[in-house]
Length: 284
Ligand code: ATP
Ligand code: MG
Image (cartoon, rainbow, N blue to C red):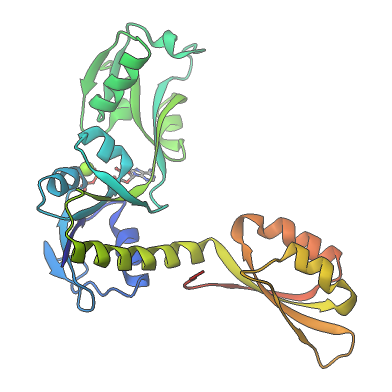
């Protein structure tokens, strides 16, 4: 049995629960009413917690594993292993300053007052850059600190930057890039290790599928070789003759990132009737 601490409600919880669901693991109560639940079809027990408490809970071996933002893992600085990067809740911890303030290098931050919810990460950054600064820890609404005279600049989570803009701030230096991670305390027994491997196998199949699409297209037979070069597929594309002579249907897999550029190339080579379909799971 594996015990996993996950966020009860917040920016991580929906995608965390979706990842388990798409991995075929049924969470009995979805975390809404209960603080603890067992999966019905996998040896996992879920603990629903505030994200700030997850690193300690894993470090103290109350949970074997946890899913939390890397930013929180770094701030809490327990000795924990990252078992897998999960690719969601991407954000960064960055310094932001009033939009009219001049900034060229971190040395321009000498002697300033910083407001943040991440004092440890900020202190490490200031120490590494030999910057003298005063840190004011606040637990939320960090962006308003400069406008109310609480601090000169802030160090906070940014995803799109629109909250900063609304508060007359500009981002000048990224200190940490973060995403949701699966953490462990390195104390799993061999049964738990193999359960974790089963879980990671499923997570990877789900995450990989999200980066790829299944593509079907009709192509002139004299272009099969050229198009195979663009669409190498998992081993090689499937090519089947169409009822119309001189034409074939090709099936393959394409990376989401390369998608538009490849579609343009395929059209230029005479491909027609292109269908692109999401993939639910992908096991290579
Ligand atoms: P809790 O009530 O559990 O303490 P919280 O209010 O501290 O929650 P959330 O706002 O739910 O935290 O954010 C959880 C995590 O999601 C953050 O620690 C960070 O890793 C990530 N995150 C935060 N803000 C954003 C954002 N704007 N975009 C993407 N990810 C974000
Ligand atoms: Mg929190």
